[in-house]
Image (cartoon, rainbow, N blue to C red; front, side, top):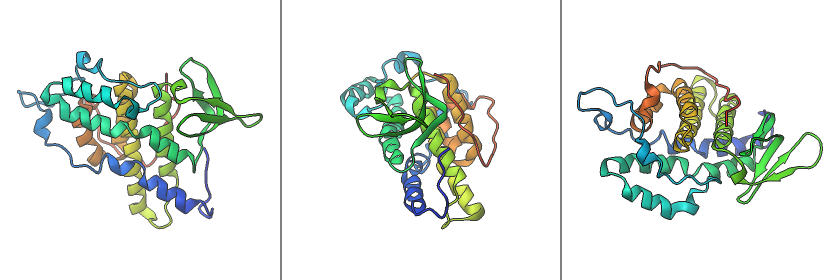
Length: 255
């Protein structure tokens, strides 16, 4: 993992950037009323988003949702009224992931030296990754950097990148917010990264990955994350325990 010393001159701006992206965007919003996800029998609705509706979701290979905004608008307009609000929330929470990753990579390269960077064609390349709007550079420990494009990555690799930065939040204490209070804040920030990764995985049809990531988000911050899962990914809560762990390792994700 790429690590910055607390004494590093880069620590403050990097930490400020991590605190700004993207955690406050998701759990900071008000939770919807529980009745919005209750069945007529009064039990929690743990069903998946209807497959016949989910198949209409625009799924850009390069994760550039702004490029397909017209298709997104048309898709949402076709949904039943009771489904529109939830789907808009999902879109809002995943549509900026690519832009957030680009901004974070400018300060902290993604470390793919151990788990590798998984490509959509099944190949794996190892190295540290930095990127811009057009491409990504994977620099191995020796040799020249390999240039790839955003559309070369599968959704699971995007999720792995997002949770990498979530783990980075957990591993680096903010000197201005030390102790238990600082740890709690870092856990809340990181939980949002796992939540957004879960929503992204679900959007692209990877239910197992979505469930795993949602459970990890729940472990980090059950009080904040549970209402979002109830509203947006209720099926991931079936038999899910409340819990709390100070650190989670994202680990390699399956394609």
